[in-house]
Length: 67
Length: 314
Image 1 (cartoon, rainbow over the protein chains, first blue to last red):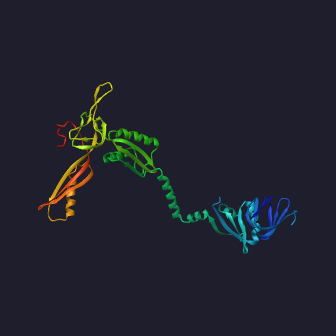
Image 2 (cartoon, chains in turn green, brown):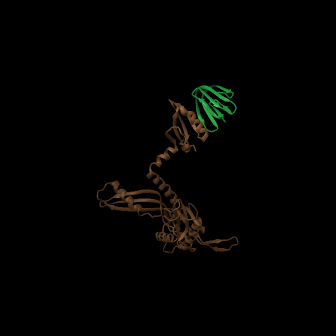
Image 3 (cartoon, chains in turn cyan, green):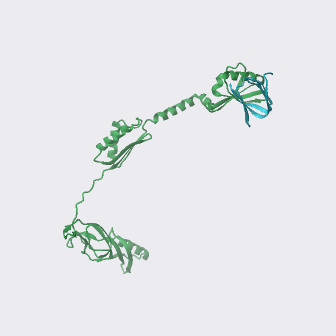
């Protein structure tokens, strides 16, 4: 589940972070891959079930299970 | 437990291993950000032991929050002992008496009470007492000091034990006096303060020495005569002249006048109030200086008894 507001993006029930840097995040979800593009994206909070991202997000993509 | 966080950093290429490890071991990462070629992050202090299981090198930088000060304190053993001793002493002292205060005017009763309290195990550095015990002591003291003490109270505030009491005053037994009140000198009635008796004069009446002011006889509506006690005061304006002299030693006139005035004023009755004070005459003869003054005084002219008794002023 992805929850979006003005300040941050919350990603619940993720499986794995596949790629990350300041402009791009690729997160493995149960049935798809989530791509987040933007500027100065950082992990504000990370635990077993939730990731909260902060930064200037421009694009969110839902991709099928492929790298 | 949001009272402290540890700051770590890890090399950039190990970040995915860290994320996987954190997800597996349920470690919370906060403010994960890239700084130069390292990633910095915070974890709650209580989870630091979980991070020790990570097989990759991760460097501890510092602790922030309350835990920082607790760890700082833990490195100074004497401080810990001091803090512990302080808390223990505060805890223990809240159950003990620090002072015993007895508020009363009779020193022998105060000393006696201190001894009685010691017998009841109430003294400095002894335990504070319960309400039941305080009531018990209060009843005991009331019985013990019933002849000397009118009112007594025993209570505790904080760690101080208080006793307050007031001295028992002997009530005077007054016998009724049925004698009439007469004027002991001439005057004009200014006011009457009669507690018991029948006034036969009123305000602004002129009375002479020996005149009846308050009588003890009243007649009821059934024409029955009844004798009642007489008690009260009758204030009147009295008119008096006083004179005083001092030897003439060529002193200053003002000084002489002042000295004579004080001398005359010392002759006035102590209970009288000066209403008017007039200088009649000040004379200087060869050997002495004389001052004559006229006073209008307000004084109590009431006296018990008959005219032929010695208590009237001559």
